[in-house]
Image (tube, rainbow, N blue to C red; front, side, top):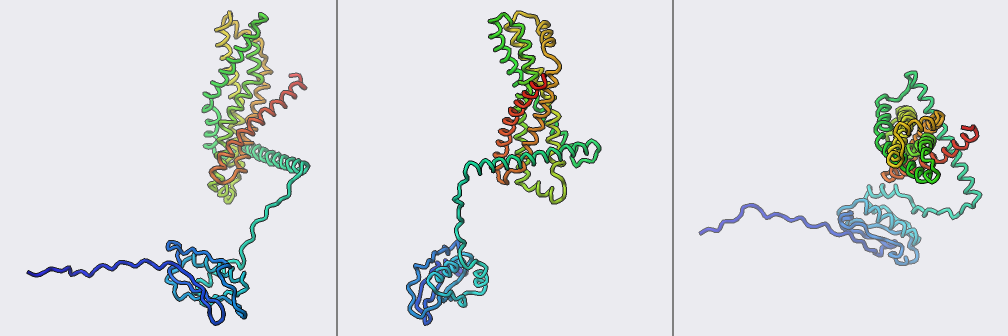
Length: 390
């Protein structure tokens, strides 16, 4: 009986690479740093080396030499170790000799700075109240000038669009018109309907004490036409469309699409900003009229459930009590509200950062600026209306 053997040779197992190590030896001309093993990052090649690792050199010693005969492999971790050894030798008053290093390592080490970069110094100067006020004033004036220039460029682009010479794409304008107009009818209608109903309810409760319930028609009609519908519609569009504009432009800025357009010489004001600003400026007055009618309808629904008056009488009282100038005044305010919201949102988007977090910050900032600006503009319009006797 013969014993069969496997003719194939035994499989050789790869030996693991030697761990990196270093040691200091005393040479004829001073200390010698001997390194051995595989100095790679996966093999644990990142070893520290400080000036404390170098013993006090004997008298007459002027340099630290290198012995790399025991190195089997190396990468950037070895260069980092050599740079630390060079800094430690300089701290000990020794010159670092690179003759014993491989030629590629010498070239890479030569690319590093001779000394570590000093830590950044923080400015400890604190501005006083006058300096802060001056910086805030200059920043506000600068932003006002930038927004005014942006509005001027947009107006010029709109004039060119009337003559067919604009860089604006018709597809972008139609898309923005749809998003800023018909696509917002539901939320504008719901909010204004509820506001009109609330005004009618509160007005009826108070006017009933004086037997003047019929004047609730004037209250709801004038309030919606003159103030409430314009403000509420503008606030809705600031949160819905203004934030979307800022987020979209900030995203394009982060994706370097704005930079690409500027490289090709395409004006940003006409290609991106003009459709957004023009669509919101045109749709806001129409949304205001729609919101006003829906608000009056909300007041009508509540009044019919609480008043002893016919529907025809309610509408006749509303038409007689609300003059046309109230609608004209609200229409003009809505146009300026829409223009301000679009300009502010576009400006915030253009000055945003390039990270994902900056997109959310830009959207939030655009909404806040839009709402605060709307209230401030409404106050200015109220003063102007009082001065003009409107």
